[in-house]
Image (cartoon, rainbow, N blue to C red; front, top):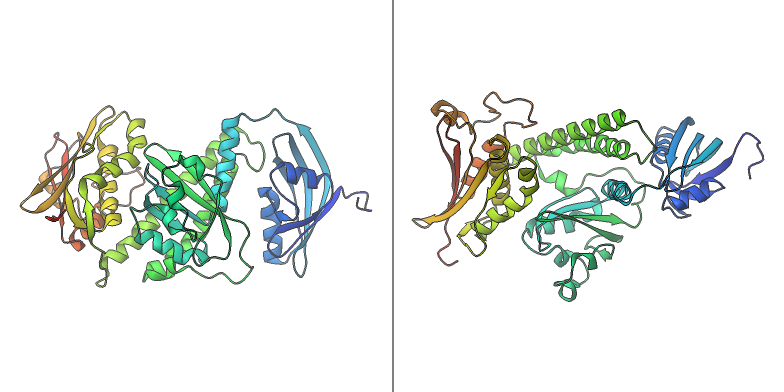
Length: 448
């Protein structure tokens, strides 16, 4: 125990913000919260203070509150930055027993921490095939870009080990919690699969942080010109941090919180996600307007892509009581187009149809082949569009007077540019009071 009677416990961290030494009662609290010694700091409020002190080089102190499955603690923390890490002094430590959290609440907290620490996330369909990929770890550039190019394939095909064959038919739980290696990374990655209606979320969490060096943007950020190269990565980092911190507050990982403040944190996280979506839209906008933009056409099944879009958005439709009438299993319409970009267009069309259809309504998705052209039509029961609105609906930043829905007014403009870049077209038929029918047309694939 520390000799200073005012100090309850001391601890020490290294340059990677790992807790390498800790006295009681912090050591026991750290282990109960899922941490190891030595190992990453698992108390968000303490981690934030340590990072700030090390980054600024200033001695910082404040009161923090936290809890594990057994205790709720409050303590005064002083962090003294050093040459390699920090010294942490804790005083006025108070702990009180709390009622055990129900399993559902523990799952929410654990998932929030996984999302915060993940270096790569992906959206999978119900067969664990890749739909969309995002990553922030710079040592996953090679794996991330390969996964993006391999949309529609099993995510396990992109691990360094050839392990997908032996588990291809296994239940998803056989993968959850396993550790894999990824090409280009020397770290090991823990797998977290979250089942959703119509698919899964995949998160890969590293076994250790990268060495503490000057930040370097990933190649994913470097690929885009203009906004994508200069502004988007700069904006993404603080906005993502805001969202992560708001989620930490909302799920009370940093300690108990009154309900109104938890709801306020949820509003902050939601607003941050809308801002990230806008950043993504602006980056995509610049990409599709670049003369060098060239999609990667492939043999796809337009009916299959439509079913995937309906599956991904099924939960959103159910929340509004809307029935999605998608192409039936076995129905096939061969086409030529880039799978990922075609899915992006259909997610936009189906998402808009859900948003503007009345609650309890229906959205139809129909596919057909006409004169060697593949078509998919998304029809809704919304208010419909006048001739003047139809002329403007594909314009850049056009929202037709709508407000408060978080949209950027870029979705349909980008979708049409993507369709045209793939040798296709995107059109609308509508009338006031009769809903709208958006049709995506792509070159057909007679050999399909």
